[in-house]
Amino acid sequence: MWFASKGTMDIQLEKTLFSPGEIINGKVTMRLKKPFNAEGVKIALYAYRKERAMVNGRYSSTDRRVYDFYQYLDKKHEYPANQQLTYTFKMAVPDIPSPSTLPGPAGAVLKAFLSFAGPQPLRWYLEASLDIKMAIDLKKKVQIQVAGPEGAIAN
Image (cartoon, rainbow, N blue to C red):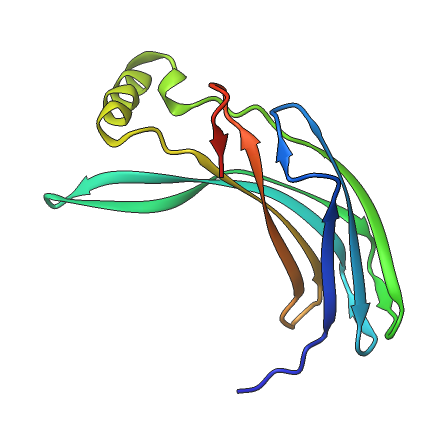
Protein backbone atom coordinates (compact mmCIF):
# COMPACT_ATOMS: atom_id res chain seq x y z
CA MET A 1 0.00 0.00 0.00
CA TRP A 2 1.33 3.45 -0.90
CA PHE A 3 1.02 6.35 1.54
CA ALA A 4 1.35 9.94 0.38
CA SER A 5 3.67 11.99 2.54
CA LYS A 6 1.85 14.25 4.99
CA GLY A 7 4.64 16.80 4.89
CA THR A 8 8.04 17.37 6.44
CA MET A 9 9.30 17.69 9.99
CA ASP A 10 12.80 18.51 11.20
CA ILE A 11 14.64 18.93 14.50
CA GLN A 12 17.45 21.49 14.75
CA LEU A 13 19.85 21.45 17.70
CA GLU A 14 22.66 23.77 18.76
CA LYS A 15 24.79 20.64 19.26
CA THR A 16 24.38 16.86 19.57
CA LEU A 17 26.74 16.03 22.48
CA PHE A 18 25.43 16.66 26.00
CA SER A 19 26.30 15.96 29.63
CA PRO A 20 23.82 14.82 32.30
CA GLY A 21 22.00 17.87 33.71
CA GLU A 22 22.66 19.95 30.60
CA ILE A 23 19.80 21.72 28.81
CA ILE A 24 19.00 20.78 25.22
CA ASN A 25 17.91 23.83 23.23
CA GLY A 26 16.24 23.07 19.93
CA LYS A 27 13.70 23.87 17.28
CA VAL A 28 11.10 21.73 15.53
CA THR A 29 9.97 22.86 12.10
CA MET A 30 7.06 21.40 10.18
CA ARG A 31 5.37 21.98 6.82
CA LEU A 32 2.22 20.05 5.94
CA LYS A 33 0.96 19.23 2.45
CA LYS A 34 -2.67 19.50 3.56
CA PRO A 35 -4.42 20.72 6.73
CA PHE A 36 -4.75 18.26 9.63
CA ASN A 37 -6.80 18.27 12.80
CA ALA A 38 -4.27 16.99 15.31
CA GLU A 39 -3.94 16.48 19.05
CA GLY A 40 -0.75 18.54 19.13
CA VAL A 41 2.96 18.74 18.38
CA LYS A 42 5.25 17.10 20.90
CA ILE A 43 8.94 16.49 21.50
CA ALA A 44 10.16 13.40 23.35
CA LEU A 45 13.52 12.50 24.87
CA TYR A 46 14.12 8.82 25.53
CA ALA A 47 16.95 6.38 26.15
CA TYR A 48 17.45 2.66 25.53
CA ARG A 49 19.87 0.22 27.11
CA LYS A 50 20.68 -3.13 25.52
CA GLU A 51 20.18 -5.87 28.08
CA ARG A 52 21.53 -9.38 27.72
CA ALA A 53 20.28 -12.45 29.52
CA MET A 54 20.67 -16.20 29.32
CA VAL A 55 17.44 -17.88 28.25
CA ASN A 56 17.31 -21.67 27.83
CA GLY A 57 21.11 -21.88 27.71
CA ARG A 58 21.46 -19.17 25.07
CA TYR A 59 22.22 -15.49 25.35
CA SER A 60 19.60 -13.12 24.05
CA SER A 61 19.49 -9.36 24.07
CA THR A 62 16.71 -6.85 24.09
CA ASP A 63 16.43 -3.08 24.11
CA ARG A 64 14.80 -1.69 27.24
CA ARG A 65 13.59 1.90 27.42
CA VAL A 66 15.07 3.31 30.63
CA TYR A 67 14.00 6.94 30.24
CA ASP A 68 10.99 8.51 28.55
CA PHE A 69 9.89 12.14 28.80
CA TYR A 70 7.82 14.28 26.46
CA GLN A 71 6.29 17.72 26.34
CA TYR A 72 3.70 19.24 24.05
CA LEU A 73 4.88 22.22 22.01
CA ASP A 74 1.42 23.06 20.64
CA LYS A 75 -2.15 22.12 21.49
CA LYS A 76 -5.03 20.46 19.68
CA HIS A 77 -6.27 22.41 16.63
CA GLU A 78 -6.27 22.37 12.83
CA TYR A 79 -2.74 22.72 11.50
CA PRO A 80 -2.58 24.61 8.17
CA ALA A 81 -1.06 23.43 4.90
CA ASN A 82 1.89 25.00 3.08
CA GLN A 83 3.12 27.08 6.02
CA GLN A 84 6.33 26.51 7.92
CA LEU A 85 5.50 26.14 11.59
CA THR A 86 8.36 26.51 14.09
CA TYR A 87 8.43 25.52 17.77
CA THR A 88 11.30 26.02 20.23
CA PHE A 89 11.96 23.74 23.18
CA LYS A 90 14.25 23.30 26.19
CA MET A 91 14.69 19.97 27.89
CA ALA A 92 17.11 18.79 30.58
CA VAL A 93 19.22 15.67 30.10
CA PRO A 94 18.68 13.47 33.18
CA ASP A 95 21.46 11.80 35.13
CA ILE A 96 20.67 8.08 34.96
CA PRO A 97 22.90 5.95 37.18
CA SER A 98 24.55 2.87 35.78
CA PRO A 99 22.80 -0.36 36.86
CA SER A 100 26.07 -1.46 38.46
CA THR A 101 25.74 1.37 41.00
CA LEU A 102 22.39 0.11 42.33
CA PRO A 103 22.50 -0.78 46.05
CA GLY A 104 21.89 -4.22 47.51
CA PRO A 105 21.80 -7.69 45.96
CA ALA A 106 20.36 -6.50 42.62
CA GLY A 107 23.31 -4.14 42.17
CA ALA A 108 25.80 -6.93 43.05
CA VAL A 109 24.23 -9.28 40.50
CA LEU A 110 24.21 -6.57 37.83
CA LYS A 111 27.81 -5.62 38.60
CA ALA A 112 28.91 -9.25 38.20
CA PHE A 113 26.96 -9.58 34.95
CA LEU A 114 28.35 -6.34 33.53
CA SER A 115 31.91 -7.43 34.33
CA PHE A 116 31.24 -10.40 32.02
CA ALA A 117 29.08 -8.72 29.35
CA GLY A 118 30.68 -5.29 29.45
CA PRO A 119 28.85 -2.06 30.23
CA GLN A 120 26.03 -1.26 27.87
CA PRO A 121 25.81 2.46 27.11
CA LEU A 122 22.51 4.23 26.71
CA ARG A 123 21.30 5.22 23.25
CA TRP A 124 19.52 8.60 23.38
CA TYR A 125 16.94 9.96 20.93
CA LEU A 126 14.85 13.08 20.43
CA GLU A 127 11.62 12.54 18.51
CA ALA A 128 9.22 15.23 17.32
CA SER A 129 5.72 14.27 16.21
CA LEU A 130 2.43 15.68 15.05
CA ASP A 131 -0.11 13.54 16.92
CA ILE A 132 -2.81 12.90 14.28
CA LYS A 133 -5.80 11.09 15.73
CA MET A 134 -6.70 7.81 14.00
CA ALA A 135 -3.83 8.12 11.49
CA ILE A 136 -0.10 7.62 11.18
CA ASP A 137 1.69 10.53 12.87
CA LEU A 138 4.20 12.75 11.13
CA LYS A 139 7.51 12.13 12.97
CA LYS A 140 11.20 12.95 12.96
CA LYS A 141 13.76 11.21 15.18
CA VAL A 142 17.41 12.15 15.76
CA GLN A 143 20.02 10.44 17.90
CA ILE A 144 22.04 12.49 20.36
CA GLN A 145 25.04 11.57 22.48
CA VAL A 146 25.25 11.90 26.26
CA ALA A 147 28.57 11.66 28.11
CA GLY A 148 28.34 8.83 30.66
CA PRO A 149 29.38 8.99 34.30
CA GLU A 150 32.93 7.89 33.49
CA GLY A 151 33.19 10.45 30.69
CA ALA A 152 32.61 7.85 28.00
CA ILE A 153 30.26 8.73 25.19
CA ALA A 154 27.06 6.73 25.24
CA ASN A 155 25.42 6.57 21.84
